[in-house]
Amino acid sequence: MVTLRTIAERCGVDVSTVSKVIHGREIRVTEDTRQRIMTAAKELNYRPNALARSLRLRRSGAIVMAMRDTSNIVYPEIIEGAHAAAEKAGTCLFLMKYGSGETAGASLIALVQEGRVDGILWDDLPYKSFSQELLDAGVPFVCLNGYSDVEAQSVTLDDRQGFLKQANYLADLGHRKIGFIGVEPQSNISILCRETFLNTLRERGIAVSENHIWHCSFEGRDTESVARCLVSEQRPTAIATASILIAKRLCHNLHKVGVRVPEDISLIGYHDVPDAEWNEPSLTTVKMPSREQGATAVESLMDQIAGGRFQARIVDGKPEIIERESCIRAV
Image (cartoon, rainbow, N blue to C red; front, top):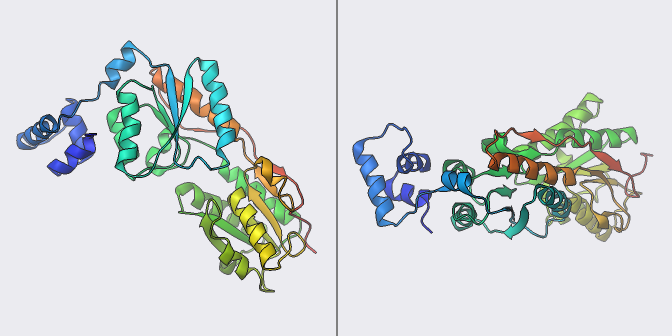
């Protein structure tokens, strides 16, 4: 599929320049550049975006929630909230799995441009310039993550409060040697979460050693190396993780190296899922209002589709500590 990016690369200009020239918006470019863009669009058989006109005339009656990883166990709660809000609004909610790269982004944009859906909910960037291409194409969207370039069109959880609560919980249990496992790759949100956790402990007179800070994938696939580090007698008495999956896999890997949870080390996750209760031991975690996030995102997207002015929102629901077996008081 020919996109604005295709034309931009052929002409050696920015995507935004191509968009403004093709759609007749005001922009200062030479006549030669303007002609090169229009000629390339014609030769490549590019079909200009008719979204603005189509939105005034008709609606598809559907929106899409696009996910890169359908195995992410946090998504079901978000989807349930989104589905309930979509049903209330009288629109259909479709789920779409996408990969990485430009083909994935072009497919999502085409869904709206071709009138098959009215807007997009998404979380992970398929590639760096995707959000700008959505903006340039005039596609209604809501991002469920805190990327800096789309912060103004995001609906996010109050992770600052979540990690503040997580840190205070361990401190209230009397732990003074505490470790933290953040998420890689580090987004604006993941950095905020880590710094909130560390600063909250610092304010309570607890300094976290650099040797007790690690980063793993959200899914916790690389927790084996962390578990090996925790065999040492110098290990912290408690570990906080930035995802429930990290906590689950770390618990399993600690058992393999002979470190007991919670007798040797307390462990707390982030987000709550049904099988956290079935883990051995059952996992203490911070429950976030993910269902409310899904509902709020759909409501915000529907307002945007109707022509309303979008404002970034942080979900009102408060984080909650779900106490189970994996955390005990410090000895």
